[in-house]
Length: 255
Image 1 (cartoon, one colour):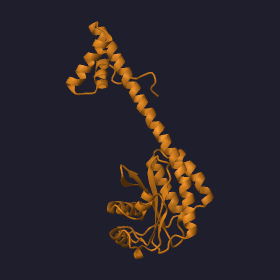
Image 2: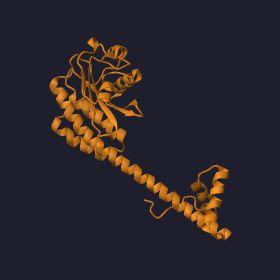
Image 3: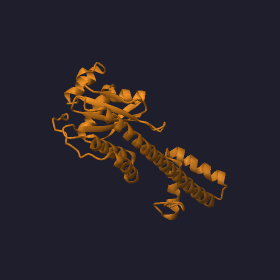
Image 4: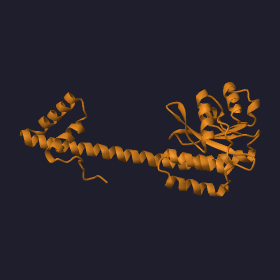
C-alpha cells in the first residue's frame, strides 16, 4: 500500500491492548490541545493494530458545522486518505460517522457504494477500511478511520479490539474536550473581567478630570468609542495610558 506520492507506508511497532487505557490517560495529561491529543491517538491506533505485512494507517475526522474535517493522522498518507474521502463528501468513514455505527469494508474493489470515492481510494492502494465512531455524548462528532492495503485486512477480533479501543479513546476525549471548554470559559471570564476593570479605571479618570458623575463619564468614553470605531476597552486603555504612562494595564486577578 502506498501514499499518493508513491511512498511506501512504514510498519509501526505494536502495543498490548492492556496498555492502551494507560497510554490514553497519559495523552490527556500531556497533550497541549485537542489536535495534539487526536494526533497521538491516531498514532497509537496505528501502532496497536498493525502487524507484519499489514500496516494499518489511522486518521481522525471531526464533524464541524456539518462539514467533515481531517484533524489528525498517524502519518501523511492517512491524512491524505481522510482528505480524499472528505473531498468526495462520501465514503465508509463518513457513513459510519453519520450513522453512529461501526462500518467495515473488507474488499474495496468489490464495493458498489461510494463509487467514485471507492475507485479513487483503491488507486491510492487501499484494499480494506474500518471506521469506528467515537461516542462523545454530544460534545462533538468524530470517527476513527483505519486503512489497510490488504483485502480482508481486519478480522472480527480486530473489529472487537478497535471498538473497545475507541470506547476508551472516546472517554478520554470527552474529558479533554471538557477540560478545554472549562479552560476557554476561564479565559473568556478573565478577559471580560480585565476589560471591565480597565473601563472602570478609565471612567474614574474621566470623572476626576471633568468633575462629572459616573454616567456622564461613561457616556464620554462611549461616544469616543463610536466616533473612532474602536472597542470601548481600547478607548479606556488609551485613557489610562495617557494618564499613567503604562502600556500594559494589569488587573489584580491576572495570573
